[in-house]
Length: 379
Image (cartoon, rainbow, N blue to C red):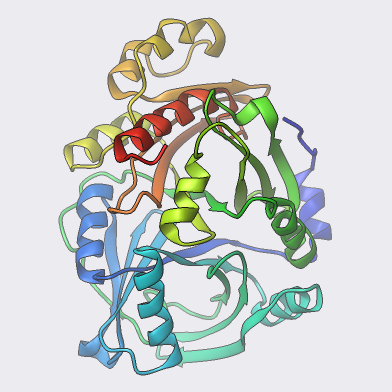
């Protein structure tokens, strides 16, 4: 692992592409109503806004769900009549339910778009304004890997539930205690040989810096391997690990994803929680399936990971992983894919000083994924 040091305050002052954080993760799905219900019941998210035929959207239905500062938007096509509607319908047909937009909140969408395009980005939507009684939002969009985009959202002059065209909406179900409070990072899978190309894209187009790098034995098992690099903005509020497959004896998890997703895309979203034990218990009770970890992982855990706030026996019971680095430790666990295709999944992560991504768990994690791949007949 190689780390490029950076002082967030200094980076912020010199940042050519300042960001305020993740604005939303936008999913194209076959049935937004049912998807929203799943994330409300299983992930404990609260619906806050809606757009559909009832308030003038004749082509799409969109449900906006939040948990703390994390926002997911689920959109499905009712009847495609425009290029956007056909894009959404074609995307679901080709890729299944998946992420189409990693939207980023920026202080100045026009300046961000101009900088990105001037430094090589492909523009999708030039800056435009939408307005309602709650104020004005400025948006623009650029292309990234596969069919994924980054919408640049400037909402400092807006005080509505989400965006103009959406109405505030009540929670779908009673959700109880919050299960996570923020998006920690979003991971993209790209084709063999393309990782460095997209790392350079984020370096050049968005002024992101390289945060971590995992290669070779860092991220390999007996059967499969991959390579990964992490890019982030100067404040580390937006972090994008990028994976590519590596040549190995059998098909890697990245190969499987690329095959079933039909190309590059968002592999998983890490959700930051302050209490991973309570979160995992509640999510398991609500039907979320997590990857299994052999008991042997926990037999020597204390020897190398040290003491954590959660007793080893509780970690063993819930199959939560631990990693420690020079800055502290983290607790993490990964769901199984949340749709029938073995593509998108989620990570729950609780950080205690560590800025890492669980390097010490890579082997255990990938072996767990390989066991699931073998069950699906895809290893």
